[in-house]
Length: 459
Ligand code: SAM
Image 1 (tube, rainbow, N blue to C red):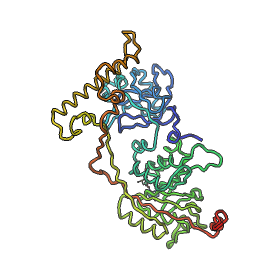
Image 2 (cartoon, helix red, strand yellow):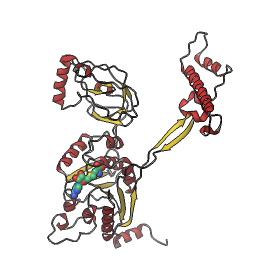
Image 3 (cartoon, rainbow, N blue to C red):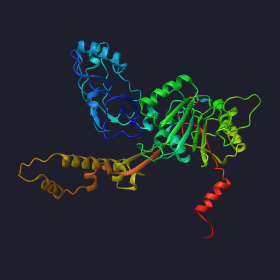
Image 4 (cartoon, helix red, strand yellow):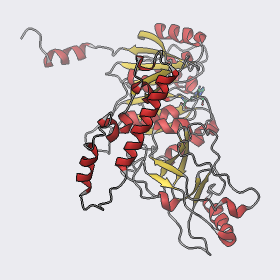
């Protein structure tokens, strides 16, 4: 049982495990951390990540608590070291010698913008050590924004709503097709994961299908690298023809997610009864006896994800024919809200930021500057030149006649100011239409007898 860093990252980074380096607000780089391989021919650092914020030897990123801020290191491999490093990188199939470009400089949180030396290779690994990055555990949310795109992917606002609506929870069994780039697969694997295996506890499973051979192989490797083999079973198949059984057995799914160009082609194979065969039809629909991939004793929840309304219409029509109920279409219109403290507004003498003259604004800014200066003064370590304890000095400062305008602001400057929220003026992207439906459990005489025995009426 390998524990996936996506499911149980533990408290600290580990060697040979996936970590995500956050270079700036929206720039994440997934990295497999490697242990330093010792001193080789003058080269001591092992693998190094080069970014425009500086160089980060893996040794500085290993065994640190997740979320740590790591400062860039001065790294000079020298010419012999560079040669050796190239050899080591080639042996390890590692691509860390090239600088990783930060495509999105907006929102750069650390302000360090170190260009790597042009022409002179040696300079590429000698950076000054003023930049920093954060080391984050891999999560489905971060993976979705940093994964190698092989197809359109399902983004977090849609994935989280879908998983909630199809009631994916620890212990659920999901069918997913197609797997594509695996964005939804990662989110669903975490949703159904039910902790380390324990006798008698139902483990959640995702049965995922992909018919594109290259995508299937890439995803298979990714799942295994991410330690998700135990939760996700990926099958290479055209589900329109081949259906959803795995090794001839039913996954007994209680939820289904279809991100396919023609979901209505797959729906007949997600029935409880054998689909009607068309003339000369082969494949799973023709197999005898018919085995349903759905859970026999549960209502099954379904979601299909389609960009066009024509696809939705055909899907809804097929669902009605096949006995699905509670059919509903939803579109997620995700809008980002930017919330910040408006510090100037708080100190404006009139109207809290509305209809203020230039003089009012100037006065407010002067007051703010004063407060900031006093805050800095208070934050400075106290010299006990007069023999007073630092704590006593502080209380002296608070009562020396200059009462601060806002005590809380001095202590917690980030709580200072009015909360102001601005939304994006419009929704920029249409992702897809989500169609939800339920296939009720078939209630038999036997089920009724069991229920009556358990909950007798009128007694
Ligand atoms: N949901 C995925 C994600 O979040 O990364 C993206 C899915 S992508 C839009 C659709 C995928 O369905 C493609 O990779 C395609 O190869 C696959 N596909 C299309 N028809 C299929 C079929 N009949 N059987 C299995 N997979 C199919």
